[in-house]
Amino acid sequence: MITTTAIILQLQPHSDRARVLHTYTRMCGRANYIIYGVGGKKKPTGVYAPLSLVELTIREGRAGAPSVVEQAQLIYVPENTRFDVKRQTVAIFLAELLSRVLYQPLQDDGLFDYLMTVITELDRTPEPENIHLKAMRGIAARLGFAIDEEQHPFLLSEPATRAMRQEQLRRLCDYYADHVDGWQQLKSLDVLMEIFD
Image (cartoon, rainbow, N blue to C red):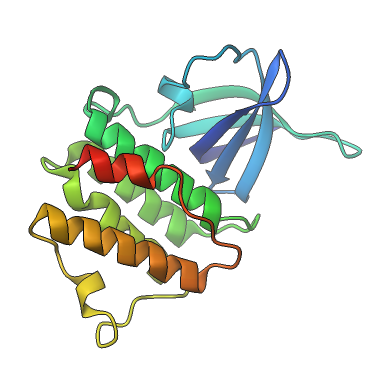
């Protein structure tokens, strides 16, 4: 058994009794696990909601068998995100972004600590409209393709209007597309644009 702090990225169907839990963990980096007893068509909430910060107890698979989640417990209970559609939409967007850019099973305490800060700031900030833009800039820097201020000053500015915010989001996605192999358009992008319209 191992126990690690983890950020929930996605919960996908696997069988009638099981799902695949996609995570970014402090101990193992990007890791996927099987979880039993979480079924149905309802959207994941609470412990398994996108960007939830949890402690996982994992039974490691042997001889090629997948590792299985034995227990999952929230270690940060969001007071605002779970009741706020805008914050939930940002969480879904950032979880999808992380699913696309974090694919190495490598420990990175600095990145994990930064993402924990993003999660708590998303929940606590009075105005969540720009938090995903700030997070995209920070994640890029920590993954080795930091935005150069001289080349892309607009991407590092704080947008003051809806139009500026949406334009910066589009350009940040284009910037990621230029720096991430196999980049695909984020499915949650249009929803995020609409929710802040």
